[in-house]
Image (cartoon, rainbow, N blue to C red):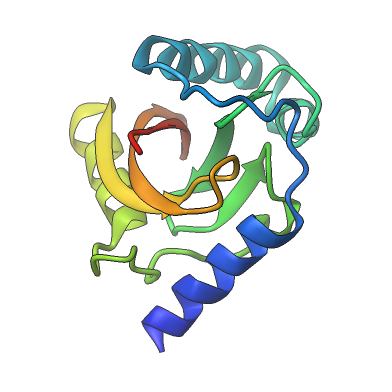
Length: 153
């Protein structure tokens, strides 16, 4: 069941995603961290409701090639997603990556324990259309986790 759930989410990401730019290069760790910091600042200054509208915009400032910001609750529910609106409202807490890792739980653990940090997992790359190694920088902002990941493929 978990594998089917992951594959269904992966198919949705790879199937109907519109990219702001189809870059052949991967985003850098510095770029991902900067996007998270900017999104966190926006949430803090403008509140979740206004900030999520900006974060959810696939042609806005929080999507750049294979970089995109996502926001998750501590219960594992996707609250905002710059690239795939179909994930908004979905609980991904029990979804495992291609290697069986509960990556959202790992993000929650890092956010609660350290406040911010990197989490490694496998996820569909919207530009290559393949499952790739990914590392996401996540940051706790109140009762949410703001993240942006880099693909290593």
